[in-house]
Amino acid sequence: MREIKLFNSNTILSSSKYGNSAMYEQEQQIQKRRIKKLQWFFVLLLIFGYVAATLAQTGMKDIELKATSEFEPTIKDAIKLGDLPEIKDTVKKIANINYGIVSTPLVSKYEVIPIDAAKMQNEPLSKLYRSLLKIGMGTYTTPYGEFWINSIRTRDVAYGAHIKHISSSSHLKDVGYSGYSDNEGEIFGKKFYKKHTLTGEFNYKRNVVHFYGYDTTENNLSKDYTKQRYQLFEPVIKVQSHYTDSSKINHFIKLGYHNLTDIYHVAENNVKLNTLFNTYINKERLFVAFDADYYNHKLPNDTFNDMIIRLNPYFETRGKKWMADIGLAATVDMYTGESAKFYFHPQLNAQFDVYESIIIPYVGINGGLQKNSLRSLSNENPFITSVINYKNSNTKINVFGGLKGNLSSKTSYDAKVSYSIVDSMHFFVIDYTQNGTLDNQYKVIYDNTNLFNVSGQVKYQYKEKVHFIAKGNYYLYKTKNLERAYHKPDYDITLSTVYNLKSKIILKADVFVIGNQFALTQVENNFKYTTESKLLKGIVDANIGAEYRYSKMLSFFVNFNNIANTRYYRWEKYPSQRFNLMAGLTFIPF
Image (cartoon, rainbow, N blue to C red; front, top):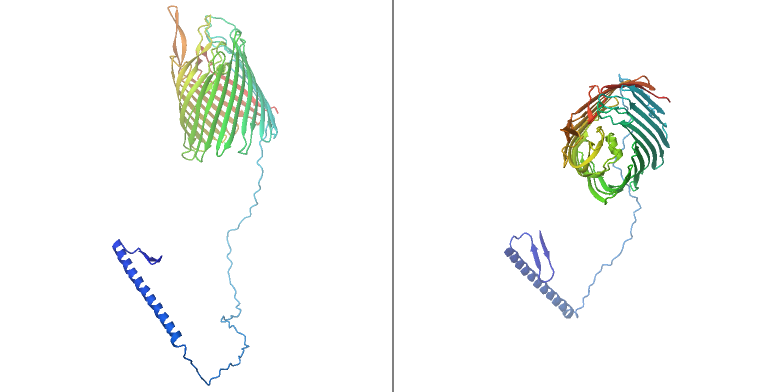
């Protein structure tokens, strides 16, 4: 396509069909010559016209022209046509046609039976009872009783109470009186508001044990001499919000206090505040946890205090198949007679759904400060001495990763590997520094420890008919100064199953396995006493039980414990009871 633009006398030509500059210059020269010829032609034409006009005005101005003719013009009258235009329709009209359809009905051999319309009905609520009583009696003179009472279904409030008692008057061979008594009581109440729930509860516990781990051939002691009693009072109040608006700040606040005393006039008082606030910032969810833990420990001749404050902000975000949270925990520990210690622990958790919630890998890193108190240590080992060296354990870092998911709607699994670095991990060893030859109380020692842990869990549940769970842990401890991680087993396994036969017969079975562990024991050689590590063999404790439901109000049960009839040691010098059984009934009074 050629484009010609005339700007002035010097014409600029451009063409896209020329492949080189020589041809383009030649074409421009030809165009310029053509334009010059046209210009001269127009100049001559104008000159010629000017001469002709001049001659016409000068040479012919004296000439007069006259014309004669016999023709006289006339105008005829107009004739107006009055006819209207007529439009002729070229479409032919067709006369009305009558037609009909002759059909033969098809009779179906299938007859439809009408069905009444389904009616929607509210699902009936299950009936609730106000109370439940469970009583039984077992070998080793073991009475058992438990009672629950609570309010029925309501919109505004819920309240209830629970009490429990189990004791034993057992006399085991070659050791002291091994009787015990566990008593618990609890009352609670809840008030439901439009956007909040207010909960109050009061817990009471009274646990009695005896330091029976001594040789009766060398000592003959009364059961009052070896008695130990722990008594706990614990009121708690909680407030929790239920905002559905993402711009609101949801919160959970828990304020608790407990007083724990033993028979040797050792007491601890603990005031603990736990709070958690969360709200949305854009699409991420911000959590802020703040905890304050004040601990007061009183001995007959001494007392000390400990204050732990913790602030933990973290963000949580999630996608269609993944979820993650990241944050940082800052902790300050103010112990009596020591300068304040500051700790910082990272927090990172992430998981990704690879395929249909069947394969979900996850990883994480965290840490924290654990308070070791009379309550926590006595719950783990009730045979500890009242005079204990208290230290808090600091998990500097804990790195973990695993795989979890649902194999089906009935089966789920979780496998995990973790590695931790812990400062001042606690261990229990017998206190050989006390006077006398009993050596039947434990003290607590601490050491920096690295811990490698492999854990797994599988759950299976089919409606309310079958429930099965299997879980286990493998532990590998590496202590800095101690020869062994005393009374820390190598592994533990738990198997538990429940089978419901038409809601009439309920069968239960449990197997608890604890691996080998070491104790620090004292040995005598030529009247010289030294300590060395002693291997305690693993433990297998199998139990089965059955319940027959005579009616909704009455049922009977029987439990068989330690069916292998083995005498094992969870704590050195403290053997367990052998085979024992308990039978009783469950009744709904009202």
